[in-house]
Image 1 (cartoon, protein in one colour):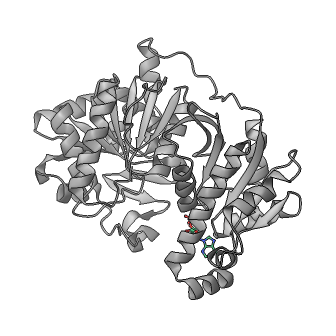
Image 2 (image 1 turned 180 degrees about the horizontal axis):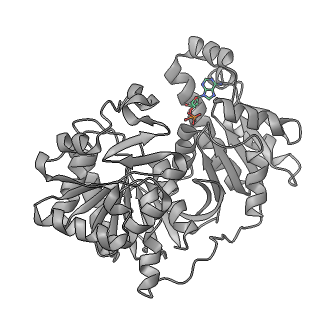
Length: 419
Ligand code: ADP
């Protein structure tokens, strides 16, 4: 293994894993810190934690466990991956985790969540989302991590052990390229800085930063910061030329499980519902025992194996509200998530080998229900959403999509991408 990544949530982990795979690294994503077993055969391993909003001490402990495991597997460089909108609070968790990782690894670490393709840019240390400052974007109203200060230097200074340990490398330096950036980082380190927010407004900036930090033991940022890293290993002769990530797709049936009710998924369900064998999961029917996972799996097995089956709970807001009024919001969600997890397991047991899952929580439930612990990253369907393949065992291929993601033809496009 060349590169180890510690990611603070699952979809963020997939995002950076896809970026690395696209740039020619064989990449595996693990679900939490692997307990045992053979180390994955990969150039980069992304450990997906769920540490974004848990208490800071727990986030630190989990991140250090991930670090120990990655170092034991031979990782030469570590990335701490968080969201490109720097999702955190004054209590953490980005600062405390970065401090703890630096205590182990030493050096000065860049802080660069910029991702220009997704309109996240940093200038003078201020984070922009599209045309507005972070603090003017919808992130100001986030239920768990409201971002009301756009200055990453200030936000981080409130989170770290020593407020004075955060510096800035401005765009006038970044624009001069890798040499200038590494010189500036070395100067900051001599001043006692441990973290350096680095401006980036374009992909070229991210590639220059990547080249400048080839020797840094730790770097931190969003998935954009990973863009330049594969080339560093290539220059050292440790990585072959970039080839497209491919998967060996086993023979088997195809299925779509849609548990998201967001607008994009509603359109995607409607786009294929008439063409593919389709079954609607109803939380009220499930709760009453009139629908069951076993029944759904038996229905799927009886369908034409030449077409994907679509199993969805996707519904319009009025129907969702009616189910929630009757069962309670949490119970409605729990009934469906349990059903999707059991249906997914039943489908795989019945020979499904390609499965698209729509909905972040739904995808989490399915990955849990299938007991998956590591996923090899394959070709991208749309930016940030790759096919992934369960390592070992069935060779099941999965596309895990957050609800609001993708165009109306996403489901059909996904299966074409894998073919
Ligand atoms: P998204 O990525 O769009 O947020 P999620 O899967 O994360 O999708 O969240 C959708 C939530 O809504 C899940 O907890 C799911 O179980 C629940 N849900 C799905 N369909 C219905 C429905 N018909 N009625 C009530 N809740 C639903």
